[in-house]
Length: 286
Image (cartoon, rainbow, N blue to C red; front, side, top):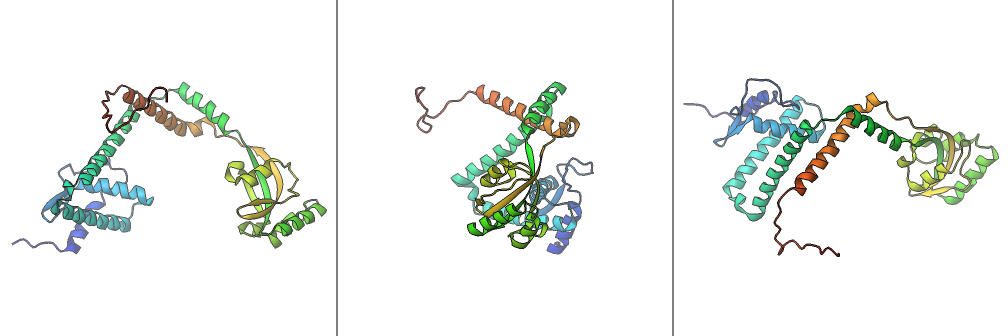
C-alpha cells in the first residue's frame, strides 16, 4: 500500500524540483507542460504553473535566486493552492465580482503577452536610433552645481551665520557648517556634491540657480527642512552618455513608442458598439 508523503517530504521534493525554476524560464530541461510539481488534495499542479508564480514573485522581491527564497516562494505557492481550493469548495467563483476579477486577470495576462509579441516583431532602424539620440541629448542638456549649505531651524540664526560667511568671504563656510549645520552633511562641511536642480526642492533650486561660483545666499532660503545658507562652489554642463552607451535604452524607448502607436491604431480600427444606457457620450460641442 503506498505511503502518503508527509508535508516535510512533499516540501523537500518540491524544492528539489524548484531548483529548475530560474528567473529566465526558457531554459532547456526534460520537463514538458504535463510535468507536475505536486498533486495536492488529489488535484494536479504543473511545474509550469509554479514557474510562472515563481518568476512573478522573484521579480516582486527584487532578490537573487537562492534556496531560502525558493523555500519561501514554495510555501507561498502552497498557501495559494489551499486558499484557491477552499474558494472552489465554497463555490465563490460563481460570484459576480469574482467572475469579473477572473476575466480581468485573464485579459491582463493576454494583453501583456500580446504587447510583448508586438514588441518582439518591431524593428528599430539605425536612423530612428540616431534621431532619438539627438532628441535625448537636447533634453539632457542641463547645468549641474557643486555646493555646500548650512541648515538650521531658526531664521535669525541663519541670518547671523550668513553674516559670518560674508565677513570671511566664504572661507569659513566649511567650519561653520561642521559646527552649526543640521543633518548628515554637517560632518563633511555641508558638502552636497554635484546635483542638478531637479534633485532639489524648488526654493533651494531657485536660489542656487541665481548664484555664481563663489557666491552664497546672503538672505537664508527656507524649505520644509529649515533655513539654508548656500555656497555655490562650481558649475558644469552635464555630458550625456555616448550613442553606443545609450543605444540599448534608446532602442527600448523607440520600441515602446512604436508599440503604443500600434495599440492606438488597433483601437481606432476596432468596431465598438457602446451601450449608451451605461456610457454617456459627449456631444461634439462639449
